[in-house]
Length: 502
Image (cartoon, rainbow, N blue to C red; front, side, top):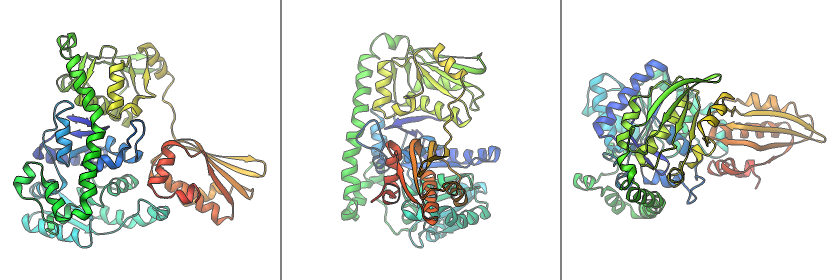
């Protein structure tokens, strides 16, 4: 499925109207029937983005959440500041698609198409109220069920999340719902989905925040004219200023400061490059496929200007089901806007989802700054080669194995458990952790995380289970080598006292 997205501070936002977004969601439902992979839809506003990012251009405040948004199957702009900012970074996002507007339209279309919806989360009784309201409006709507349950995505209770969530998953799967609405709020709803994606049998899940309260009327919405002019935030602020002042005033200010470097760079490049020779040799790029060494390799030569116009032409020449590694040759690229950046990032996500590598060749200073200021530098930091020949040689070596590994080592009077690699999407039980700990015969043990490159909430759960197994066997233990994104994820999941000491 071809996407028309724009990069906003490292996050791809789809440029769709409300009708197009609804149609895309039902297409995702149909795609699930073909491959069985549950899809995720995110509705992103400024609060969402601000809570994900740090002031630093190098690292994010919530690495897992940023990765979830990048890999989501559809991301809509649930906030006018996001739409406004897009106008200064390339082709503008078509319109705002909020959860509160999307769900009623989705219910109407689901009723007409014979699709079912499950309502999960929300405040006490809000899911049932919202389902009742939509059922009255659309008598043919198939309401698969509702569940106002509470879930854990932070804190010590995480260690029991797998067992606790199983009952919720069983109820949802038994309903055979086509669409799951998750109203736990950001980022809990997105993290909960990723923790349970491998167990869910629902085609499409959508994070909708506090939408149930708007549908049921518990929280009034702004008049239509205020929504059309992007002033709904002002209306909501006047309703509850004590609670919302930080979210709207502080977050708006921070969002503006965060997006300013990418806006300045884009406007500078637009003035300096598009007015020169590059504008006359826009081109459309070229794509070739060949056998390079032991692996089949496709090479996509990017044009001098990679924008909304050239991207559409290149997308037509690329398969939506990759069958080879991909080299992106940017040797001639002088200008990339938000649509071009979203295209490049989308190729990386799609190719790696199918098990193939993507390498970027010939990154100019301009492109490097574009990736850096738009917070995509981390994606290509280790995927960049100087020449096509170097890239082919690297691909011929095969993919770098990032799967996490756990090794037990004897170190005299102290046992050692070394955890290395990519500690994400971990499917490990308490029994696995107990079995590992049983190999440590010493009274004390060191858990070395220095080789761990990344971690998500499922990885944190594994570490908590490992800790629990050590406690039950009366072992003294210390976690060492905690740095970078691993340290940050331990903080955002609020388990520092358990894994990093008091």
